Every structure is written in C-alpha cells, then in structure tokens.
Length: 220
Image (tube, rainbow, N blue to C red; front, side, top):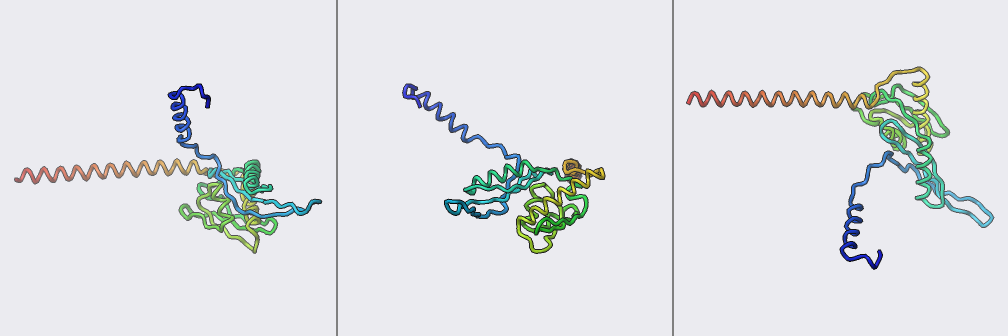
C-alpha cells in the first residue's frame, strides 16, 4: 500500500477488501468427485519417477456427466487434469422422468455393470462407483448391479459406457422421453395444488369455528 495514502483512504480500502472476501461465492456448475487415486512410477535414465493418477467424475446433476483420468507429479495437479478431461468428455444422459428409459448390461475391460429403471421414489440402488456416476448425472431412481469382480475404475468406465449406449440407442430410435425438467414442473404443479387444498380446508375449518362460537353466543 502506498505510504502517501491518508489513513482514512487506507481504512476504506481495507473495508472494501473485507467486503469482497465476505461476498458469497457462486455455486460451481459441475460437481466433482474423486473416485480413485493411484501412485504410479515411471522408469527413466535417472531412476524411477514417481507420480499420481486420479480418476474423476464430474456432472451437473441435470443430465450431463463425464469421466476423466488425470496424471501428474502431485495429487492436486492430477485432480485438475482429470476434471478438465472429464468436462471435455461430457455426455447428456436421456432420462425417462427420474430414471433411465430401459435396462442395459455393459462390459468394458474388467468392469461389467447392469442398470435397470426403478419406480419413482425408489432412490439410487447402486454400489459406490456406479452411484458416483449416476448421482453426478442427476438420476434419482435406478437399480444396478456390479457383475464380476472388477476394479472401481472398471465399474466407473462400464457405467459411463452404459449411459453412452443408452444415449445412442435413444437417438437412433428417436424415442420421446419425459425430461427431469418436465418432472420438476409436474411436482411443482402438484405441490401448488396441495397447498391450495390445504388453504381451502383451513379456511373452511375457521369458518365452522366462527359459526359455532356465534351460535353459543346467541344461546347465552
């Protein structure tokens, strides 16, 4: 800070800086999840070079999800690279309301998963790796099973491939599905109707109490 600045100006500058630091930060567009961190080594002329690989899943919980693997000498840099790669591989998952449109079984490498639609309100019935992907995509109701003895990364890649194949099949057949936005609108409409009914019942109840109290007062 400049020494020639008067004390009053210095105090104003400090207040402005404190106000900026106290301003609420905007929520990030994508939710990032670290699935697996592995320590890797690479043989070089000078010896073994150590590093890290991080498997990341990113999604906006509104239908978009991506998977990426980042590699670097430190964990934080690997996380940033993995997140960046995942955002480049984003796909839009077609959903029938709050679930997937049909069942599918996919194998990718050592990972094999089965995804099935679930009734509304069932929740996410899935293991850790599968749950991370479907949660990031915004799927609220789904039933899944990890088949075989694959690794976490294998299950993640298999789940991502399954969602990609669902997207391709829906686009190929031209299926018309109800989006999650439509479901949220229907839920908001139903909630508004319930609130109106509750208000009407409350008004009717108050009116009856007034009539009863008026009758009691008239008898006295």
